[in-house]
Image (tube, rainbow, N blue to C red; front, side):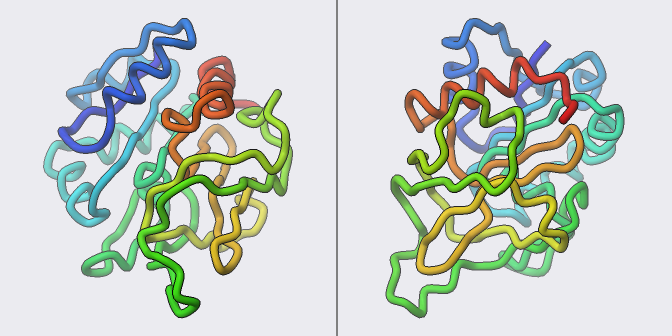
Length: 205
């Protein structure tokens, strides 16, 4: 059973629709107790890192999410959902994340007069092979909306980058956990393929 975390923020309906169109029957996860019955978990995300982490703590989701990831079940973070996997973020006050992937989240440098937030289609360059990119050609465009980016402590956790003034990490992986900075649910054919790949993935690389 594929679950989509639903805590009242983000584009959960768009993610649900994309998963459903791929032939799966996802469910919204509204309480921590529902996580243990899932085969796959998706953390969608739009919003402020510190506010969402505060909400996860208030609703007692943090430990169930960490326990799920420790059980080697596939988990996917999308946009802010990917950033939540990090150790901490500089957005607002320095806020601790889920600390599943050792990394920090910081604001995109706009010294090159680039628009921040970064909004629109950008090329994704795969740096490592991973099951979520099966049947997706390298250097395809995906849709981004973000002002902050993730910087991994270990390069081995980076599986794709994009260029926006400088090289930005846009996909990460650690064992059964993956994250993408772009929005696959808004990225047409390639995004749909990525979501299908995730839903068929057993968490092994």
